[in-house]
Length: 398
Image 1 (cartoon, rainbow, N blue to C red):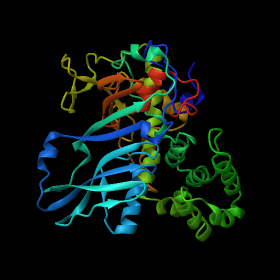
Image 2: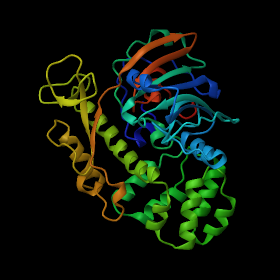
Image 3: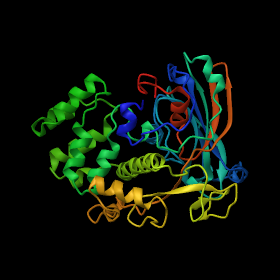
Image 4: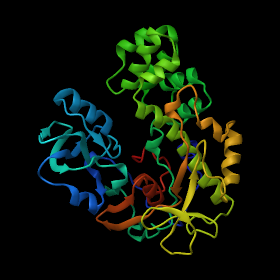
C-alpha cells in the first residue's frame, strides 16, 4: 500500500521485494547525520595560503539557507554552498566565499559552527560535490533490518523534502508559475493548507486566505515563515503578485519550478515502471551517464547508467520515455514550451537528464544504524522508505 503523501508527490510504487522492517527515524536530530562529499581533485586544490576561503559548515536544527543568511547578518561573511541541507538533521557541508581573501574566521553558534578548511585558487562549483554520506539510526526496527540487501534496486525518486514534507506545496507553486497563474502562486505560498501540517500553521494560513487580513497576519507570522513575510509585504504595498514573486530570493523562485519538474520526473518513473519499462539497465538507443558522469549514447558498457529526461522547454525527446512525459504534460494541461516564461524569464528551465536509479555505495547496517553514500541529488529518504516501508512516512520521521 503506497502512502497517500507518496502519491501526492508522484511516487506510486516500491521497487524492492523487501517486506519492510518498520521503525522510525529522526527521534533525535543526532540520529540523522549527513556529510557532504567532494572530489579528491577538489580537496587537493585546497591550500593554506590565500584565495577563495573554504569552510566546513556544521549545523543542527537550521537549514543551509537560513544558516548562511544569519552568518552574513551577524558576521558580515557572505558564503555560498554546493547544495542545501535541511534543518532536521546534523549536517556537515562545504561553504566558501566568492571573493578572494587571506582572512579566515571561525564561528560557533548554538545551531551551527563554521570551521576553516583553507583556500582555493578557483571558486568551488556544484560539479565538484559528488554526493553525501549518511548515518541514520532506525528506532524500533524489526530484526528484518539485517536482511535488507536490495540497495541496487531503488529508483531515483525525488524525496519528500523536495516538496515540503508537512506541506507538499512547492511543486504546486511551480505549476502555477509555469501556467502563468502568478496570483495563484502567491495564494498557494501564503494560504495552502495541508492535513500534515501543525494546527497553528494551518490557522495562520487560513487567516492569509483573506486578503483583507494580510496586515494582521504580517504582525504575527513566526520566524520560520520569512518567505511569506516577504510576499505579504509586497502584496500589502503593491498588490502585484509578479512583484511579490520577484521579491523572493532567485534561488527560491527557481526552486519552485524545479520542484514541479521533480514531480513530473517522479510521475515519469512511476508510469514507466507500471508499463514494464526496464529502468535499472540501459537499453539500445538509451541516453546514459558514464562512470565519470558524462552524458552519451548507449555503448553496452556495464558501467553506464540509464538517464531519463528532466522536462523543460527544450528537453531531449528522442527517448522511450517521451510518450510518458507527453501524457503527463497533457494531463497537467501544459506543454514543454510553458517552461519558458516571458514574464519572469529567470525561472525558465530548458530541462536535462537525471539518473533513473540510485547508486547506493558503502551500505552498512550495525546496531540499528544504517550508513551509506549516495550520488549528488539522490535522497536518503527514498532509500529509507524501501527499507522501512512506513504506513505513514511523516509519523515515522520522514
